[in-house]
Length: 184
Image (cartoon, rainbow, N blue to C red; front, side, top):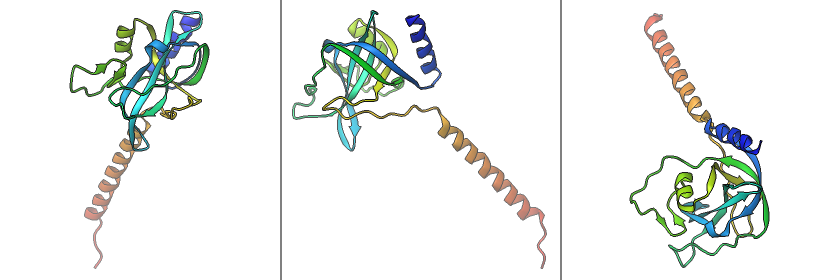
């Protein structure tokens, strides 16, 4: 039953829909990863990504625990404690961008990564991961929360509507200008 639920969540996310998720298990300290070059309030820093092994399962899900500013030891990541023991995370399930620009093949330096790819993370860690990243509702102490809103593509539809409305208004104005005789 649990696997089927995860399949439904993954297919829902694949359709571009948002899913609220509550996952329980334990955070894996050894697999803490930092995604570099993330900007928050005009400052550069890292997203802190930690996998959560799901209770009663060999599978895990990545949790974006928050944002932390770069420190004097950059390019090394700052020390961020990971809570021990059981954890429950409630938040929005999102998929990381599939398209990104990488100027080098050397995009992973220890636990600091240029971009987050679930497939790459799975290959490097050996974990079986759900194809989503959880953005928790509650912030982690010492980290700024990451507030991303899912994009359902509405803006594109609004732009198309505006384009066609403008074209229709222009055509109507031209037709009126060319076909109504001026009374002199």
